[in-house]
Image (cartoon, rainbow, N blue to C red; front, top):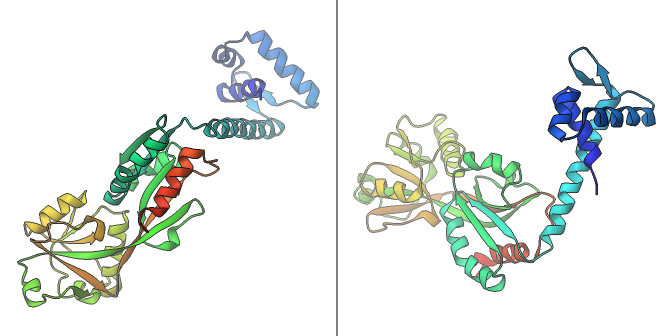
Length: 298
């Protein structure tokens, strides 16, 4: 599929100058001018307004440009999908949570055994740092946590519903007077409201769930909030008595020093798998999908 001449018109529009466009395309200015004139003659209408200093698209030219971009995008997607039919692949996966890293380390050995030529690239970061790469299609699969199933899109699927817990230092007065394993959400927003809360950054599923709880029962957020990046660090700080944290069950640790409460009513986040839109899965990608879907059920 040759789209060379479409790029000629796109480059002219981008540079707004025939000389600069010709230099960028590595063609002579006379050849580029001849092609544009012939195209306009075939179409029966000019594609650019000729001003003293610039070439600007006419309405017909803008229609042509829009169509040219679409055709080039179709070609790139087609070539990518054809390439994906091969077993050789480079699969880029991102995760925002510990559970995603654990899943990746557990299932990749199986994938490497079945597809030794495939390379995998994993990155872990907060969602705010991954959004641009996900939306631009640089990441093939993302393992994310969401605060509500209402956030699920067509390119996502829920892998599990994960319980959120309240992590309190084991020697905290509340633990000594309430040794059970359940805490009412209202108590968190009233009895413990003035405690120091160790919360994830704004925008994360954990933070959204915490903020929603406080606003539901107290109509405001606590005055003492310390934003902490990373569940292991959060657990360490809770164990040292620095504060109280909302903790997903997958991040639970140091149980000899931390008392974990289940919320009543229950509080949950959703572990989801996100894949690129318009992606035709090759065999290694399909195998990754199946292993990810089976991971929690097994």
